[in-house]
Image 1 (cartoon, one colour):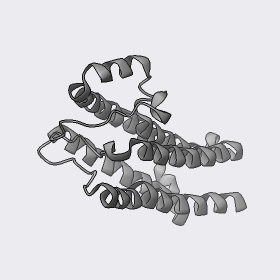
Image 2: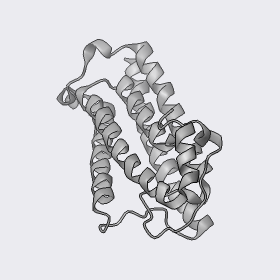
Image 3: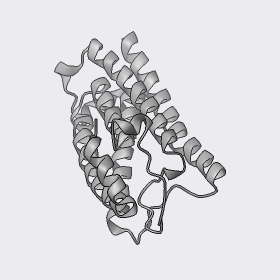
Length: 203
């Protein structure tokens, strides 16, 4: 019982910290430092706008999963728990994966510097191609970090909702990456092509 209380408290703290660090604080500090908003998805970009909307719905489901698990455990059965995966050691690994994914995603955002965007900036005509640090080993470490986060959440709260979220997040990011890399190819040409050939898509 004490273990369950720990996971419930941890997940509430984690999701609040996640929202503040990766979104609120990050966007605010970016706007202050570079005097522009990194959120460049508009309704004119139909595909990216829809993908962003789908991602937001998935994120709401993720938050609901945490809230139900942590604050209203009586209703947790609605998420169809996978009981045979409800193992203490697996949950502890999940906690570690969640923490690592948060740090990994934040560092990946920081290493992009002024090149960080939420969406595709169709008006961008030049920019810096980041190929060092984490980006030396992965072309899409932010997406990788967020995907790892969904896997960590599944380990802590193994149910059909979190399992489905892993699949959907992977699918949405795969589609986004396709269009983002198409944009980067147009922007950086041969330089990006060489980078793509020597660096893995995920890891």
